Image 1 (tube, rainbow, N blue to C red):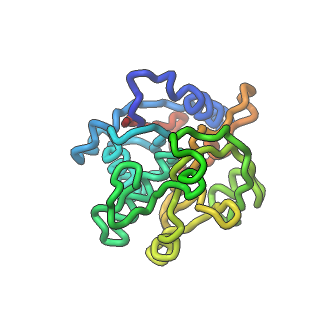
Image 2: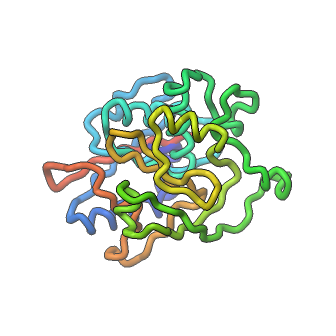
Length: 246
C-alpha cells in the first residue's frame, strides 16, 4: 500500500525484497497495488482478502490518512503488517488515536500543533539541518527483543540496518503506549523504537528507516525483515496489497 503506485519503480527495492522473501519461503508473491488516497475517506474495501499489507515510505501529507486506515484495518482484522519508515509512523499514529483516545494524534510533519505528537522531529535535525536536508544514510545497531518476529527473522539480538530520517517515534509516549499494549521489540540504544507490535496480535513489523532496507541481488540473501513468515498461507500464493500516498 503506497502513494506512488502509478510509478511502481519508486518501490523497486521493496518489490525485489518481497520476491526474494518469497523465494526463501518457496512462495509466489502476488502484489496487488492499492493507492492509499483511495482509503483516505475510510473505505477499506480494496484491502479485503489480502494475506498481508506492506506500507512503504513516502513524503508529504497526501494519502497519509489512507495509510493510517490500512494500519487500523490490519490490526482489527489480525492481518500481518509491514510498515517501512512512514508506514511505521502511520501505524503508531493509528494505535495512539485508539489506545490513548487521542483522535488528533499525528506527526508534527503533518500537524504541527497536534495535542499528541507521537511522531516528532529529531532534536538534532532541528539543530543541524534547518534546511530540511538529510544526512547520508548510516548503519545503526538495533537491539532486537528475543521472542518476537524481528529477532526470529534476524536470528541475532543486535541488528545493523541503514538509518536516515528526520522524524521518529516520540519517546515521551513510549510508556503510555506500552501500557496500552504496544510492544517495542527493537530499540536503537536509548533512542526511538524501530520495531513494534500489538501484544497478542499477529506480527505487525514497522521498520523505521527512511531508506528502504538494503536488498541483495542474490535472491538467496533475502532482506530479513521482509522474510518474516507472518501468516500461514494455505496455498502457494501470498497476496499483498499496497496503497500509495503523498
